[in-house]
Length: 77
Image 1: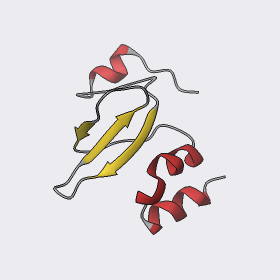
Image 2: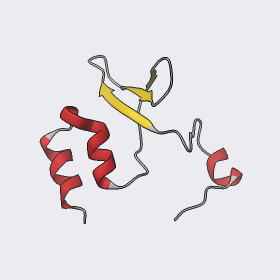
Image 3: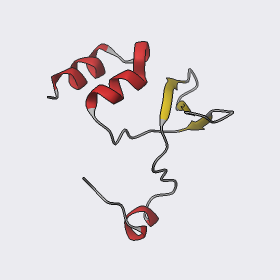
């Protein structure tokens, strides 16, 4: 388990912890739209990093996962 510290997260422009992601959608214009469980609206980001188990990341991506992403996530045991 990794514990993030203020020093670790201060180097990054926008770090969200303990934010249960419901879904991530790629946008045609680039970037992603991210919906956090329980939030009224979604937010747009340039990139997203999944810091979770591979099966959870695959579930969040759902049908939007590319074949390469699905295969890579399925290969992790």
